[in-house]
Image (tube, helix red, strand yellow):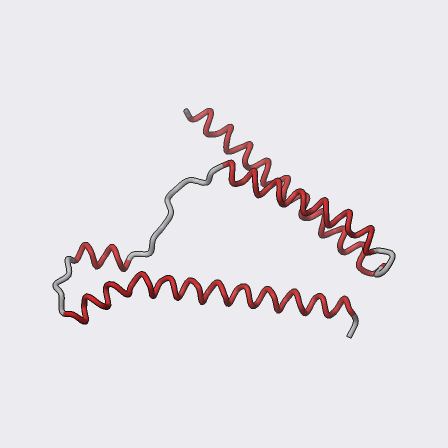
Length: 131
């Protein structure tokens, strides 16, 4: 198996582990949210239906997106894209087959970062015009 194939396999394994870890963390968080309700039921305490509904409802964030968060993400993503693009020229002499895929990945990241920056600017403009 070539080194490039091993990198691909390692990437997909990492992605699978990160996804599973997120699901497990969400499950454990939900269990901790419900634990007081379960303990109260086991003790036979009378529970107010409003309290039960509040504990059973998933916490939603109705907070609007902060344009500053988009700016920070855009700056980081743009810088990463530039770094990967420049890095492709250093990797190219050792692994010529990886030069163009890495350069393409850097360009994609650069465009995603630019999109985030444009979205932040558009949100700021919309909020400014709205009041």
